[in-house]
Image (cartoon, rainbow, N blue to C red; front, side):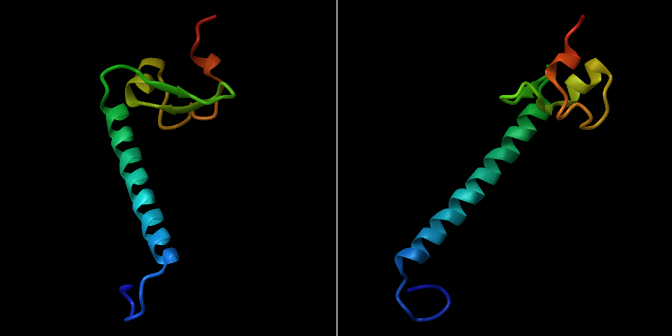
Length: 82
């Protein structure tokens, strides 16, 4: 039975429930990842397939003198010495 009325649950109800559970699990994993990266004592830079910065943590921003998310979207080469 579904939770809205007395009709039997269908395959689509089950699929929607599994999709919701998967989305929740993915959101929780992403939150754990962000906490882990942000709390790391070392600088962490995540670079996408195009060579652009996708994520930095506070230590990286402190080491290179950047605030907030201003590095995101920049080529990783901005962090490399000449």
